[in-house]
Length: 463
Image (cartoon, rainbow, N blue to C red; front, side):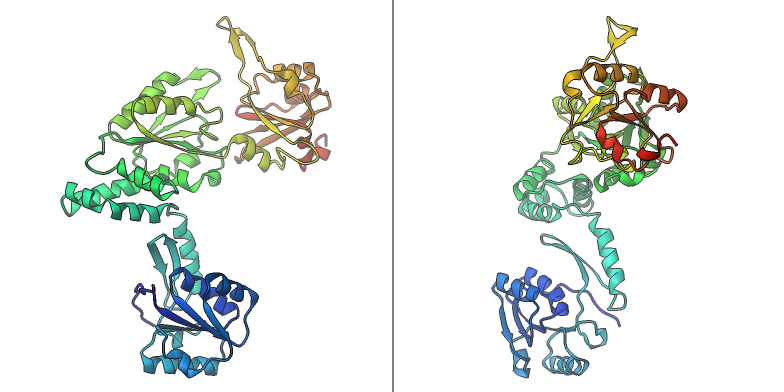
């Protein structure tokens, strides 16, 4: 069955919906959203249909349909009707030249309902001529993930500023190129409020646009590439330059645009391939060259990732920047090991701590971990140490000295969420000795608290 996709101008049009069951319920919502004046006729109404009609103030009658009901209709939807009624309604609609959709009977339809994606006035429709409606639904779900929530507001803002950008740009390629660049940025993230979107576009209008590019700080998550957010994936696939850290896995880098320049600036146990101030300068220079720069960090950029420092530097240089959060290691690693960070029976709060040893008087051999141990040792909380493997002895001593019980459970998670993940379950009293028997390497996360006993392997840890 061949078909031509069209958009039905629905505002002020009358839709006759025959039937009040589950099939009618599926068609009612898009009709109301599109602005149709809905008139429903049915022998029986299911509660959801009645509620939707009442909420919308739509007209309905509890009775059997009559031929006269078709006279004022601009569109007919036959739902929850017998085959004989469906054939009759299709014939009557054809005689009157009224479009009709007979639910689940494509051979009787003159119009079909596509799987629809809507962002304000922007709509996309996926149809299969009634042959594979489930496939159309799956395709719609795939496309939904690619479109920012504020797309409709962007279309409205473009319409409101149309005179300005059309006057500034000649027809053809200049307009397409400008709009394509706006769209590339929009896919990385748009505000949700209409005025905020309008302000966002205002900064990118041709007469006001600078030559600078932009920087997007992206959280790569704890390691598993499937934990990357959709917005982060879009950023990687549009980046000109990717400046990345040591904890970013090759599998995540493989998702990036193939011809993007990759610059490694990782840090490992105090050995920096590039000092932080030089990383900041690099970000500014790449953006000033007009490039879309992705600063890719393990975990979340704003949790022990020095993302705040980089944003401050970029804003001071007048560089447009945004942050795409990632799943922080504490959440990802604990979840993959079956350890809840909070639990009604164990912990009502969770504290994230950096476990880096601090040098005293500039001497690497004379280091300490100066933390509020008494408050960290309080019961009914979970304490998570990032980058604390080297400082494990200091952590154990500090918590015990702060009053925490030596029987407090401890979990050490190496390369959490990755195929190489290893888990060591122990207690404060035994963890250093256990680590000697089962050595782990960085990156290793340390979780302290009774929530660790929720791990499925806790009872068999000594087996």
